Length: 586
Image (cartoon, helix red, strand yellow):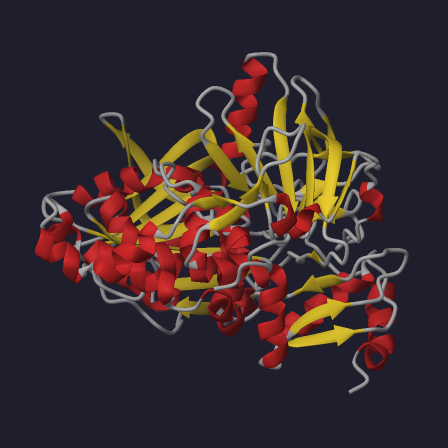
């Protein structure tokens, strides 16, 4: 497929999927608001050729529809992975006849890897300098409370200081000045592990920051790959050929030859600096915290470099479509990596880590719980906040139907486990303390134990103004805010145990109209509750086990200590509305 960014943009032009914006546009707030409106309409990729105060054009929304994601990679990677997974029995042990039958996917695998090219075949080396000025980049400030401009599609490459195993991750980069940025290494990320090892040795960690290049690099940097799968190898699999790399003097890492920009430098040990706030993909601001610092020493870029960027915020944004593609691509691997797990889905509307669903094998009593533990211990899935599991075949992406299957089988005394005091996603503040929180596992296995109501025919509920079913068995209600009535969930639980027994799950939110949309329901409920703090159920302790009974109440109201939702500033919304025909005169 595409060896560089230009090849992909050329295809987008040919297919009518790229629009150039020649009107002057400010990278501070204005550009991001244009992007958001276009992606809301499932519109085209955007190439801004006149970015105020900057020398480089900006391209955004390259992956903002499923069609463009498929254009970037085509069906071949999915076919290779699926064919190999379905043929493992033929490969172990390998037999000549079986290998010949699988020659096409095996040849695809053999093409993966990297290859060295000479400097004159590496466009990224066209301009090289140690006189670095990061402030010349058209980095976006997407939301008005952001701490500054951020590189939003950074490809951060590091190597383990001892084993030299590599990691390519997408860790946001806040530009502080001409030569210094933040390095937002979250607690479960490979780059953070490498920095930890270097810091234990009191050594600086060499870092290569790449911007642009083959689209496959962007996807590989965010893919939840098993730890034994190197990201550069995965990128070459998506590309269908080896990734060209070039060596340079005075830098320990090879460079991606077809990149747009590359910055080389170090992250020193034991240095921290405030980073953030940043309006992130959870749809809220992640707050200011101390993070490591990236000191840039040198820079390489194409003479006509194009700066790729994205904008994150409330779902669905561009990252949602990349995440959906990765789930389709990697889903055949889950049963191989985790035997007994038949299917797995994480929900982009919840920021992916807040909620996962799984179909597992249940061949003996509570085998499903064993598989749930396995899922919660695998790679980036370790930060899953809430996991819902069934043994019934279904479409996990259809959350309404999936939840109905689970609720029809859910027995709270048997099927609910809350794990207190664990790590939490760095971007999720529901646990009341940075990087801390809890986890929940909910099972719905075996035969149905109840018939679920689809409509609410009960009377008024004390202090509740609005009552809406989300699906059969799940009721969404709203009333006073958390600040007005912080104990409302407790009182609602007492009422539910007497009058709402037929509804196994009740979600208390600020506006019950979110029940009309699965996307709104998922985003609101699962980004606004911590299992240990905000899940209410009648319970008793029996031989060291908490036995829950009756309906569960999830208090998913906004709490006063949560970060603010990302919202467009009024003057920026008015500016973009007034200038819309300037951006798109056609």
